[in-house]
Image (cartoon, rainbow, N blue to C red; front, side, top):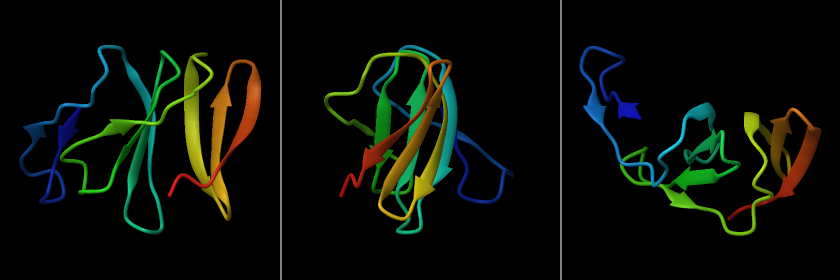
Amino acid sequence: AYLSGNKGKTWQKVETATQVSISAAAELADGRIVIVSQAGQVLVSSDGGKTFAALPGMPGMPLAGVAEAADGLILASLRGVQKLPNTH
């Protein structure tokens, strides 16, 4: 993954703790960044995308989308949509 702090003028490589393709990302209202992978990982950054930590206990199915809900995350996969409770 790559991070830009100046609206895309320059980019720097960021370690995401995954070796598979990232399929979607979302910036949450509280500023955290969530990315999901083809391996079913949900990775969260609390420092503007400089570092990411994997949430434990994810289902392991390929994820295709992520969105914020009022009380958690919505994860989309080829098997449907599931809600993940708050990850604070």
